[in-house]
Length: 113
Length: 113
Image (cartoon, each protein chain N blue to C red):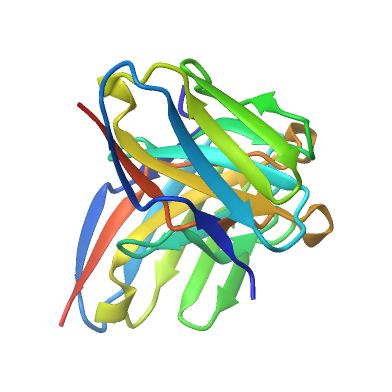
């Protein structure tokens, strides 16, 4: 069974803190993605990774960075959290030979105060 | 710039009725059009998808209608049930974009008993 897990369901951080969001998939998928979900804006791609140590900017990369040192793990980093980064963060993965389908984790609700 | 526009933002339907959600896109390179379903507290999950070589695809009560010339596609849910109450996202992808999905804004569907 396909499984994408995210390290926290809810997270509260202060402005200026460095924040790490972790995502792990157990399906040996090559591609991994980070999105943020905001009401009325849908899902917007922050960063994605084709494979280990590879990353590419999405549509809204400003204020974020990522790390993928192992195939199963993709981390999203907020270098200095700001209140406008309060959002739901969703991680997804995809198997290259499996078509376009992406498998999503349950999300992390981040609040920056 | 939102490349995939979705409407309505919210929809209330009576049990047994038909739910219709519409999407329009701009990029003619898009060649894959999925719909994702998201229940509260869960990540989105693929519901049904279509490629532009067909005008309609049906899976159970769910049907995608695709109009290539108008650059529009829609999701029809027949005999809507309270268990269908969820947020629905249309999306689009192009092979040339490396499997990136561009999502619509989302539609919150409520099916009243």
